[in-house]
Length: 595
Image (cartoon, rainbow, N blue to C red; front, side, top):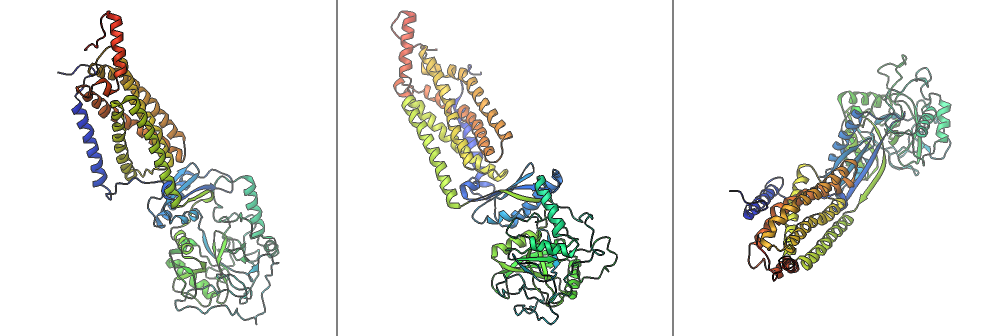
């Protein structure tokens, strides 16, 4: 026979709660790696968060396919950093990269387009601020004394610094070029020829688009005098609008990595309409790009200090590289990444082994970052880093402690209030909150494993707010219980009546809180989503605790002669009011009626 409305079997509900906790923690300890720790966000453990904004020269919106492809490639690059817990999230035309941990600085370079090419250097490098001079030196001019002999591997190596020239770039008195003149107009594309590769992607304002077009007209002109003027005007201290937007089938005037030298470079590919250049003529065109690379790795520089990036070409790329180096012995070749010269060593001999190296004054991290970027390919879009924030592990630990202290203070205030106002019922509130925390912790651990949920400061704030929501459910029940006792009922008879009347209010209040959290989660971005998620999750778990723990515990206490003592239960004042109310209604001495 079913019990009357509001009457329950407390043992059944409490046993259900115990089974839930046991099953929850069985999953925590028996699945995954067995670690019973939730996944922390970068603001709690330190790390780097970078927001990349796609840009496109024509201002058009980037396609969904291009954005998804860029996200996938950046995810591969993130994994190549060797850190766990990293993620790449797409937010409209933006990509947000989150890399936790101390070794996360490399995330800041993950958004570069990484379009690598090899261009022949025309003339000599020009010191920044100096007037260009592309006239070839005398044929009797010997190579720079800083030019190194080829290593046994046959790879090209950047010469060491000479006369103040930075390592990775040839000294100003390099070996003579056979011709410093860019390809003639007959063999170069006309200014109206569209580029052979797309210019780069999204959300560029008209001012930037105009800057790119003006830079191309000067620095990628087919007329030698215009190139010389462009080299004179180029300011290497300013941001380069052609970064990642240069055309491979046109000459290029650009800067070196540190901005100390300027270069006039030959096109990578011959123009499509050029019928005079033979397919096997590699005297000017290298025909080599990043797509010809098979693998890249960072290694210690065998001929000096620092590190180099060793490249292995694909079979076709190795053939091209062999023909190009054979045709340009004692000439300088620039390794160009996104329109910027990374290194410009002199070719000492033909290299037919299908491998080479990018040399420069690289640290280990710089070399590893460049190798990682080249190894995993170029992005289909160009990106600007609109926001980059690095949080140290020490600051993250301090933030975690501050969040825990804030939560502890909130719990302590609730405990003091409940003990002072509700006594025994306050103890049940504290116990219920503690059991709620046990469930929340287990759920956080599992969500971190299953869906990658990370707990951040905003999430901790959501839990702190949820403490008030959970305590409010208890208060609604307890105040309804007091009202029943004030009407002259005993503690035991008041519990089922109070539960039936307060249950709807508790459900309605939690429903409103959950809907608000759900709406906030949908419309919010970034860390606000974490706040909304933890608030909504805590609201749902609050119902579990109230229905399976708080109500059954109060029912058990009401059936105990000792625990139902009004002075102990905190219902003494309500009981006295109930007795006075009964006396006023019946005209008899105050008594407390049974149900």
